[in-house]
Image (cartoon, rainbow, N blue to C red; front, side):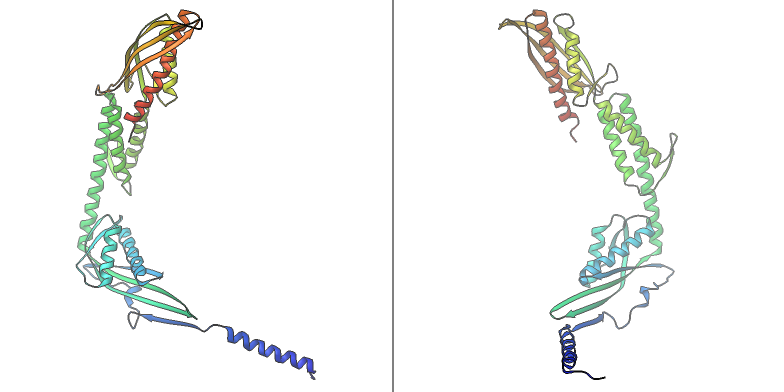
Length: 358
C-alpha cells in the first residue's frame, strides 16, 4: 500500500505524540516492607494452648504505624469483649517496647471491665509505600497477638455475673423504696430512687433474671421503673390549694379559677387529694378609693408552698394585686381574679426552679 507525503507526516506525528504521552506518564514506584521476613502463622491460625487463650487484633490501611497499632488493639479488645460478653479493661504486664506501651495505654483508655495479666506475645506490620513523583503515600497493616490466662476467664465471667446480679437486686431495692416514697406522698424522693434504679438497669448489656415480687427479670423491672418515674414526675406537678379569702361572695371561685389556669400553663395541675405540694394562705380585700369613676380594690395576703411528703416549706410569696370596676363588688372580684393569675404564675415559676432543677 502506498502512502503519500501527507500520510507519512500523519504517521510520524502519531508516533511522536505517543512517545510524548509515554514520556509524560509519571514514574510510579511501589515498595513493600515488613517488620519480619515472613508473615507470622499466628495471624491466620492463633496458637492453641491448654492454659492460654489467644486473640489477634488487626489494624488495616492505617496512615501511620501508630494509628495501625491503635486499630489493632481496639480490634483485639472487641474480640476479647465478645468473648467476655462485656467491655474489657485490660492491664498489660510491665512492658518495655513502644508498641507494648501503646497497646497498654490504649486498653486502659478504652475499656471498662477488668482483665488482669493480658500479655502482648507478638506484633507484626506491613508497610506499603507508593511514590509518584514527589508524592509519597504510606499505608500500614498492623497485627497484634495477645494471650490471656484461661483460668482468669472463668473468674472474670463469675465476677461479671455477680456484678450484674447485684445491680438488678440493688435496682429492685430502689424500686421498692420509690414505691414506698410515693405512698408517703414523697414524690420528689421517689423520682430520685427511680432514676438511680434506671441508671443501674441501663448499664446492663443483657437481660438478668430477678424473680422477686412477681418481677421475673431486669427487662420487666426496667419497664416498671420507667412507668413509676413518669407517674412520680406527674405527681410532683400536682398541687392542692387551701386559701382562706376574706371578700365578696364568689371571690373564692374567681381566685381559684385564675390560679388554676396560671399554674396549668406551666405544667402543674390542681387536685383535691394526693398532691405533692400544698398551697396554703390567707387573702383579704380592701377598698382603695376611686379612679376615673372606677372603684379600686386591693387583694393582699400571702401563699406558702409545702411538700406533703416531708412537710418542707418550699417558698412563701406575698400577694398584692388590685382591680378596678364601677361596681364595688365587681372591683373586689377583679382584684381577687388578678391575684389568682399573678400568684399562680409566680408560684409556678419558683416551683419549677426549685423542685425540678436537676
